Length: 182
Image (cartoon, rainbow, N blue to C red; front, side):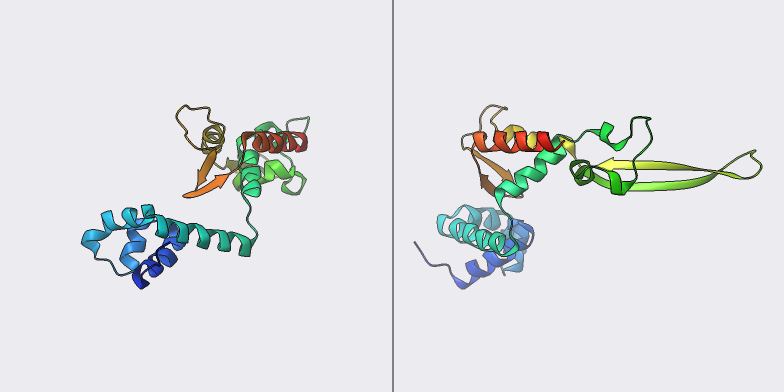
């Protein structure tokens, strides 16, 4: 395999920051004028692509990220069920009582307090606004991984420009495991 030039080595390091080939090329010293086509071209060069994958692998090992963990989290988002936010009387559960899979799917909770007009003594009501992470996006990632949408040539899912290799059988096993947690 060819060795990387110093500029290509810098490109690889910069690419890992935001996975944006054009911006990485600019930060690595390529001109603004050529970076738009040079960045994507560098990513496709086999020796640069291998260096990027190696660097990503090392980074994943360092922080303990595994493809199965990522897919497990995507499954939590994809299979989230808003009904689990409430008790059997329809009251919102306190945050500390939310099941782990539901809590993982919640991106934010906003509670607003307001006075109820015309009450004596003054009554207060609470309004909760709960937002979930992008369920559609999570389902699309899983669908692509399972080749539900047609022309996927590889048995892989791309997450933030990282190829995550995992078999559909393993993904189904993870889905079953998540479903049992639900």
